Image (tube, rainbow over all chains, first blue to last red; front, side, top):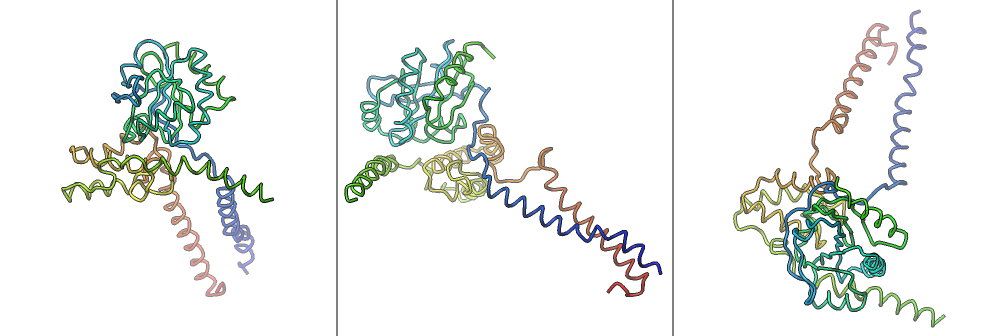
Length: 186
Length: 145
């Protein structure tokens, strides 16, 4: 007698588990097909460069320390290595930036002086100074997760912008504009 | 055909040679593959390293990874532990630099509380549904089964 009423009322709940299941499958399928952002970006943008002092990477080019970044002029900090193939790919673009008057300093990651020298002979040397970072200490300190990476540092030593991966032709305008922006204090 | 194979092989060699030659030319950082002398400190470091993500090989912890950068991170972790730093302070130092993604340890935060609340809510919902069903079963005298 009373059976039809609760039956009708709960009819839609029969579909609830199926709907949940389909929703779950859709979520998994979406996760599989759209792997999403894999870059781990630095959380240090907007913060001051940490303290560091690195010995010179090659003879004839000075070493690098934090003090070089607090002289009132924005600079690029380029994380590179002679063993890194994309670093050779971005070398012409670094030359272009240097030719346009952008000061660039390099941090060579886990590299030997003779290898760095050979790399610069082959690809050109756009750097004002090169520090040799044998244990990735500066790299970890600024939240960089690979080579090559390029940071814009303003005249007070504040990290203003991070570019991940090699700088290609199409990135030059963006880097230039970030460098110009860094002339104004935050 | 032969020429294109030759071209391919020489291209491949040219591309592979500098990478293979260079990655291994530096010795690993001092504590990348060396345990700390004090077993208690080493255990602390190990526990922390197992919950830190390798940024180069993102589904591995730095304890599991052979990437040079993971080695440098292990060395950094061990040296800081040896210098008396607390593991959670080291984790916070890394989170400040790389964001929450670097840590595998689940944290209760405004962004993450639904993850912890969802199972409780679902269990409560299930209990409610079951209770109603059993009550109904009792009322109709086993008619449902």
